[in-house]
Image 1 (cartoon, one colour):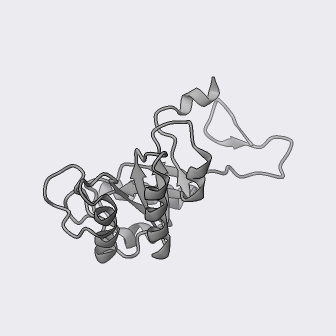
Image 2 (cartoon, one colour; image 1 turned 90 degrees about the vertical axis):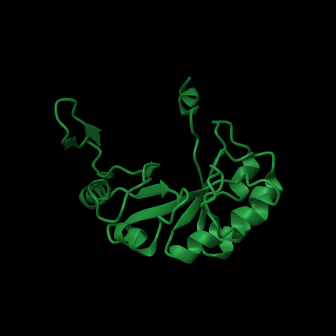
Length: 185
């Protein structure tokens, strides 16, 4: 299918065997939204109108945003909700990212944990870890194993377009932030 440059209406090509556009949209914009507010409605309406798979990445950011009400609002519109958590928690990084239950101490890394998120919004679809260190395979593998044991997906962003093959061993989805344009050079 080609898009006519004079309009936004899809114009089929002579090959009509594939008349749909495939892909998915991953948005890191859910911070501060509430179920049904104007921004949430825009996302829900886009999913309802176009049917493209949408993943909404947000986090608790020191307060309990990703509650069951919030998650279920998006699920009613077919939008998947991902909780962004940080992987650098100081003294006990693995225990903290998996089990910490006090997300509001003020540190930018103190945003809750897998267990905290599941205690306030167990319907969450998965977790995202930003700027993961691909060289620390055992650490991220342990996180993935725990997340998977809860029936959730794990997304990672290594912050580069150079992805180590073993990252695919534990990550369900990988984001290539910042350097995507280098793939086309």
